[in-house]
Image (tube, rainbow, N blue to C red; front, side, top):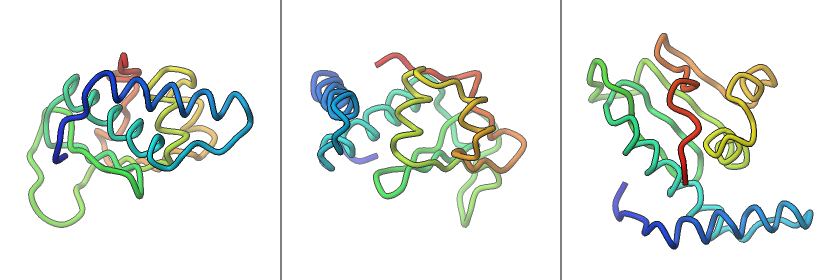
Length: 122
């Protein structure tokens, strides 16, 4: 992650996404991108490491969780989901297990279950 997202900007983007969802509208792409990256940043702060790559295309990815360091190619532990699913599990509005059971989280590897580190607290 290049630049650290300020807590005020991150919370503001998250509020804008929630407001749009509540109104049945599509969130602004910039708000969605900032909210996703902010929550990825919080996950990185909460569970630093390099053993699991969390991807939320096209907005961002971060390596987290202590364990074997990965440096080249596709990491052995990958978690990928869309922005709406990431925001829901990262904020606790949807449990990890429910989103995974519904097939909205694609996780591979023995360390790819993030239920122990989610939700993060925005």
